[in-house]
Image (tube, rainbow, N blue to C red; front, side, top):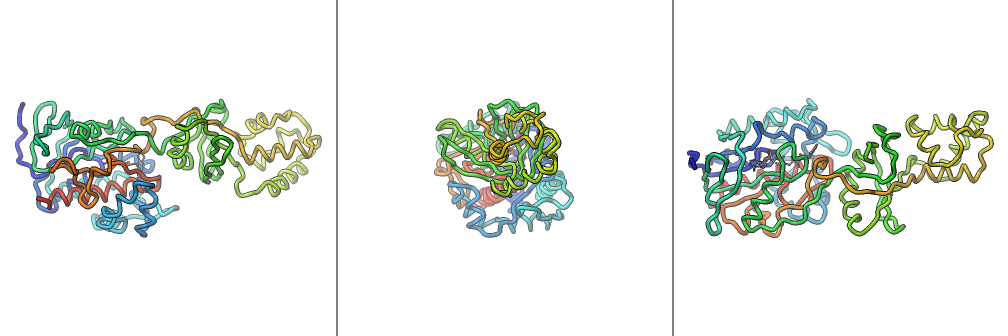
Length: 418
Ligand SMILES: Cc1cc2nc3c(=O)[nH]c(=O)nc-3n(C[C@H](O)[C@H](O)[C@H](O)COP(=O)(O)OP(=O)(O)OC[C@H]3O[C@@H](n4cnc5c(N)ncnc54)[C@H](O)[C@@H]3O)c2cc1C
């Protein structure tokens, strides 16, 4: 097999956000770095982030609060965030010429609303620091000797370096190149991989309402999640109806907990279509509408209350005849309608898979990585960064922040540690 010449100090595997940051930083510190990417271009997934706008971090400057967003494994991030946190990330991009802005929920975006500009900054960082970029270079396996990696094996050659940083991402959105190769490599290198599951993912629903409601977005609804008739938790936000069930920010947000509950049994969702109004106030509101439309048919009385697309669905669910005269609806029937508006029941059939997921939950066990350096505790010249490790965050820029911080630290450690 041909050895690809270069005598590299550091080889970074995977040209996503974490890999580009790691490679750029190690090179900035004077090391000879090669970045290996199996695609024909860098940052394919990065370009899709934030619907093409790239929500690059979250302006949560309180370290403790920031860490809390990542759940039980968040503590691991204390050190990476204290070295290169939210402020440092924003400064990094601004200094490289990217103007940023903060939106609702502290989400940070490029002022241009264009993820390509974020990628361009990273490419500029790589070029400025003379990183050798090898495209179409899929690592097939990793050769090790004792506690050290010896070489990376490609289809048509081998690469050797002093240090290696594994930044191959997770298994979410595999069309972008993130097919989970790194989990196999890490396993071959004796690392443990915790259970992998799709996270921030749409939810499939058993009830067949897809065709009626498909495409409808409700900006502000409440969702209560029940198991064994007990309320587990609730959330507010924007929900999108799809042919398979539910998507949109609030759904992605609850999907991880719903996935956990599903392992224990059936999960029911109750959608509150009017979360700002309690039962009595909503009842008064419906009464007012019924008064206004008293001579009309029931099916024509809900226009002020609900989006057009929702009306036939709610009428069907209510069990009331659509052609009933409004003034013939009894108080009890109206109360049942109000109860329905405050809790449309849907039964979870499952979560969509990795194909549709934003991130992977699970990854290389944190017990086997030193959070001070991102170095493997098992292999002396191996470092990890990004989604491959067993931490994931909610939507809002948290996942990219994790990539920037761990990438930067891994690059720095690979450059500095002997
Ligand atoms: C649709 C979508 C929208 C998102 N929006 C946001 C958002 O707005 N904000 C946010 O914070 N997060 C967002 N995320 C999550 C974010 O994109 C990821 O957390 C992030 O891309 C992970 O970066 P990474 O560098 O760890 O891995 P990846 O981005 O997955 O990059 C890994 C790279 O490694 C390469 N690779 C894999 N195997 C090999 C191999 N064997 N040899 C060589 N190269 C290999 C892949 O081709 C890929 O380029 C979004 C995700 C998706 C899917």
